[in-house]
Length: 452
Image (cartoon, rainbow, N blue to C red; front, top):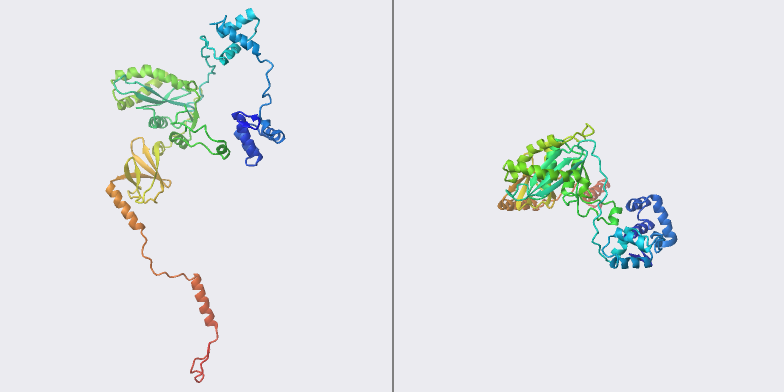
């Protein structure tokens, strides 16, 4: 990006936008500091530089300067000539040694590789350098961190279509908290695993998963600067909403190696679980899920280790009824004129605890909840209701009855209240009339008519 004669990188362009908003007084120094990730002192220094030298103050000071240790043009041309000439086929390290020994050119193997890559000269000795990683210690308490993932595989060895195994493992002990088979990796599989874990152990402190769209919104890292300055946050996914209601912190792993414990679990299960499923002659997904309950117990007794701290980080289970309403799939609908909603190609009415139909305001929002046992419910105005499916004829009749009730009734004779302005004017006139002096009527003064 360019501003006049100054060419700015994407990072510097971001600073330009925020500094312009700061100069205009739209944002404060503290807000600009949070967005740019700089200290307030640094923001003030940049602001002073922009006032003095303009946008050029945001560009790096060494821009346009040639480094003192830069390789000269003559040496670069010599290296390219050696690579296609007498040193053809040598590796970068070997070329560096040969040039030092025979030509008096002292450059490192990395410099040789960079120069040849810029000249588009391939090297058959090139290989991917392994990344250096630091081993992370286990968490100290059970339930402090749970790793969650799924593994698509031919678990039944052709006796059934390929299945995807969803699972959760404790970071401190290596204990399996939940396993569930589904045809594909989906939200329902992870909700079943979460339900198993919360019912058997409790609510964990945090869950560690990859960046799948089931866990995190695809727009999670794409908020604009204006949205960040306004304090907007990314909308949670369905799974994220469930974790938020349970008070579980959701952490995103940046690589498969970061959640290596569950990645190694899949290797173990693909060698042990497959054999046990074969021995038990499991041929369907339903039977495989029933088999996993006993398998988890045997696996944990064999492979789980003790945590460093005897205390557990789990919070108490919120209760089966609350858990039933929280761990579910939610869909938002609008109420029709007949106090009904549509879901899954069917029409439903809301029923209260006494079995009575709940009247709905037209176009009011209703949240349909599909539970793990297949049952349906609805949230309306903060309360939970059951759903009753109705036929299309019943739906039409309900709408007609609703329309009849909403028709305007014939208006009766309007009688204004005592404090109505009309009443006040009439009352005041009557009062004044009563306070006036009464004159005798005609005949009372000998036939003379006395006016008021």
